[in-house]
Image (cartoon, rainbow, N blue to C red; front, side):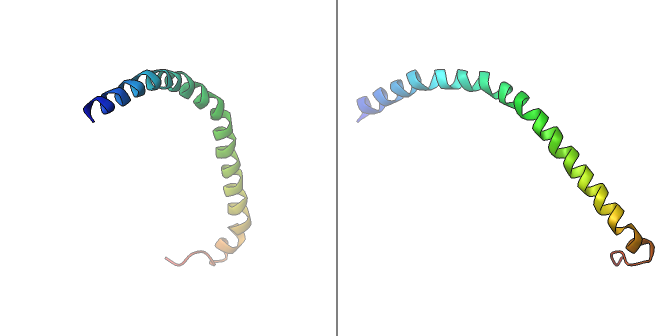
Length: 68
């Protein structure tokens, strides 16, 4: 049993280190590619929040806002 587990660990070592190096190289690239999409998402959320504030402004001015 000890020899089998040693062989399995050695196989994992041989197979895993290239995957770990690949992940170290790919992760920053994936982050850079996803950055514009995050910025667009933040901008769209800001526009929707502005529209919601504009639509609810008359009700808030008339005192219909959330109860404090």
